[in-house]
Amino acid sequence: MPIVVLWLACGALFFTLMMRGYNIWGFRHAVEIVRGKYDNPDEDGEVTHFQALSSALSATVGLGNIAGVTIAMTAGGPGAFFWMLMCGFFGMTSKFVECTLGQKYRKVKEDGTVLGGPMQYLPQGLSELKLGGLGA
Image 1 (cartoon, helix red, strand yellow):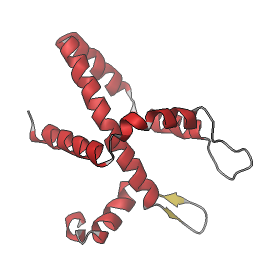
Image 2 (cartoon, rainbow, N blue to C red; image 1 turned 135 degrees about the horizontal axis):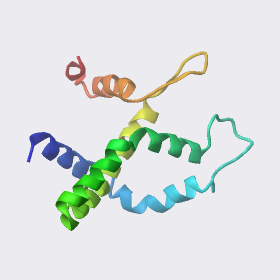
Image 3 (cartoon, helix red, strand yellow; image 1 turned 90 degrees about the vertical axis):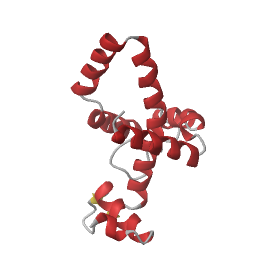
């Protein structure tokens, strides 16, 4: 097994444990958000919850993902399906942590432009932990 796969698997397991299994108990809440239970038409905002989810999915799922699943199922059979489920299950927490950090460390410029993502949370988060040299 390549070391990067092992490293990602360990990270996903770590995040799942540290977030106390959010990928299990937070699923119902996520469905409620997407279905519009918490939407308020009077609030300021540029996109709805569903539009934000659709945008995130369109940026994440591409032709390579679809073709990769097809090839894996053809070559690996049911075992490949099981391991894809496991990777997806634990990978959900990694994505949740990534999005949460992006929201926590985002910046809003004076013109209303929002800056967020890894380019914002890595330097700020690492400097808070006194690990700023890792990002240099």
